[in-house]
Every structure is written in C-alpha cells, then in structure tokens.
Length: 467
Image (cartoon, rainbow, N blue to C red):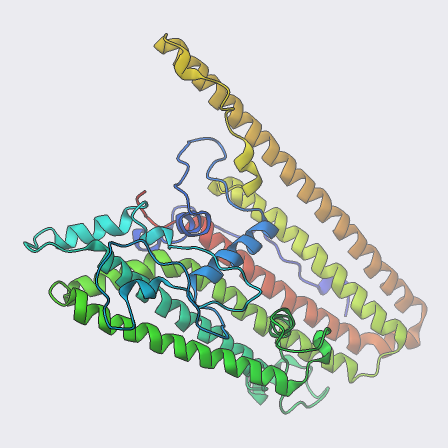
C-alpha cells in the first residue's frame, strides 16, 4: 500500500453551517461558563471575548468541575458542605433536606470542594425565574430552596445515570463484551487472524486504582484482571447505592415539603431545566470518554493483529514510531482547527482572562462625562486589539508546531518507502504490516474527528441561560 492512500483529517474543509442552530439546539457553550467557571458571562462585544480554557487546561478544568457535578465512584458516604437554605426542621429523625446537597466523598486523597451548581444557584437566578413563572398564581407561600433541593437531587440522579453508562462500558471492555465476534473480525484483516473474544482494561481504570490506592501495584501493566474487575464492580455498586439514596431523598422531599405545590407540570419543568442546562455538557464529556474507550479497544485489537504477524525488531520500532508521529501530527492539526473555531465563535483560552483594563485607571474620577466615555472606549479598543493580536500569535504557534510535526512524519514515511524500494524481500514481507498500520491511522483519524465535532458542539450551541 502506498502512503499516498493514507487519509489525513481535513479539518479545514469541514463544512460548518453557522446559521443552522435552532432554538431547541442552543444548549451548551454558555453552560460551560456557568458550570465550569462559576461566574457570570462576560458580555463585552470584543472581536474575541467570552474566554474559555485552553485545550489542555480545559480538559483538566472540565474534569475537575464535572467530578463535582456527578456523584463519582466512591468508597464511603461522608459529610460534605450543605446547600444554602433556610433553616427548617428535619425531614426525618436522621435525614434532613439539606443532606441531599452533601457530596459523596470519593476517596480520602481527594479534597472536599464546596459546590453548588451555578445554573441552579440563587445568584444565577435562572432557576428562580423559571420557577416563579410557574408558581406566580399560587396563593400559598412556598420556599424556593425546597424546589432547589429537588432540582439538585435530579441533577445527581442524572449524573449517576451517565456515570453508570461509562463504568459499564469500562466493564464491557475489560471482560471482552465490548464487541461481538463478527464486529471484531470486521476490524481485522480478512483471514489474517481469528480472535474469538478480546478483553482489555482501559488505562483510566488502572490509573484510578493506583491513584486511590486500590492496588499495591505501581505500574498499570502489573494489575491483574481480577483486581480490575473487583474495582469496577465495586464502583458500579456504589453508584447503585447513591441512586437509592437520592431516590429516597426525592420521595421524602416531595412527601414532606413539596406535596402541596408539586404538580406534573412543575416536576416536568424542573426535570427539563436540569436536562437542558445541567446535563448537556456533562453528556458531551461522557460521550467523549465512551468514544475513547472504543478507540483504545479497537487500537489494541489492531496491535494484537500486528504482533501475530511476528514482526522483526526494526518493523516493531518503525510501527511504533510512525504511529506516534502520526498521532502527534494529527493532534497538532486538531489544535489548529480548534483555535480557528475559537476565533469564529469568540470562545478563547482561559489565559486571556488576564487581559483586562487595569483597576488603577480611575475613570470615575473624571467629571467630564464625554471625556470619561472617550477614555473608556479607547481602553476597550486597545484591549480588543491586544486580545486579537495575541490570539493570532497563539494560532501561528500552533500552525508552526503542526508543520514541524507534519515534516517529521513525512520524513519518516519517506525513509520507510526508500527502504522498501531498495529491498524487494523486505517490501514483500512488510506489505501486510503496512496495511495494518494504515488501518490504525484510519481509526485514529475517526476518533479525533469525533472529538473535534464534540468540541464544535460546545462552541456552536450555547444554551439560553439568562444571567
């Protein structure tokens, strides 16, 4: 197979209909700020505004905050911070309404974080306005904090539901149930090898076991299958316990606090609100993790097929080096494409938050209204140009990195082809191995394109949360 047949991800030609977003689809990007940053949206109409996290920072920041949104895999139920509510009698002798705001602490090495979902908070106001509209005809007085507690319970239950989907996928991968035999054979080269079942524990599971001291092993490869299986099953069991806990709180809150007010209309409205403004982003992140599990599973299948061809030492190293260069190149190209979309959608890196008008400029000390406004406008324009120029520097750096990676990859491919042309025996013996390598490239391309589309969905479909 000629390397010209390798298809690279063409992000630049990816067609985006900027005007195709419907009202029902506007559900994600503003939510990123509301939930992830816990602060109001910056409404400055600059060329590049509404800053977001940089690619690597964003993933870490997103993971940290999303772990707060969900009741993640836990070992014990422990006390956490209470949601701010009016003081009221306990729901039961042992369980209070405020306890639904308490987090399940994952492990002792994870610091407890005080958290209230911003999209549900009183400071945000969106939930309050939605509820007041529904209850404005009520003659009885009601405590909105009871309804907020109810929405928090719904939030937890929906997060648990998505988390269970993720951890069941981990379980399927580790027990060889992720793909049926016919689908496995469709991934492999026809007649090249026969794999009835394939079990592969995702690295994320093993790293979590090491991090949370669920194994004495220091190297993921040293963790035995049974240990991984026990750990994942225990996580799923804890999710079931959490689900039972929140369902019980759901029932108690309705029976003891909300029975006089809760109608099907109000209940459905709250569930819809949580789904739109609390779960859309979380679902996108879970979808990305699910795709990563499937990609790594298929990639391991292809690696197994390669090893069954009994490659020599040179071929093994070449296979490893070419794939690593390919991955680095395509990820660098993805970074360029994402930066371009950030500019298009005015969603810039978190580091740009530092570009602000100095507080030392005391505009209010100027009594001349026209002059004060003139100076303010001048500062805004300077800030706008600075932000735009710095973003272009970011983009240029990303493009230079991509070009350098592409050059290294092309050079390595040319060296491989030259050796093939010089050695006819080597060419014949390595043709099947190259076919395997190109299929591995293709799977990587499909995975990165999927990640790109998920990122665009956050940029292109902001929810209509009113701050």
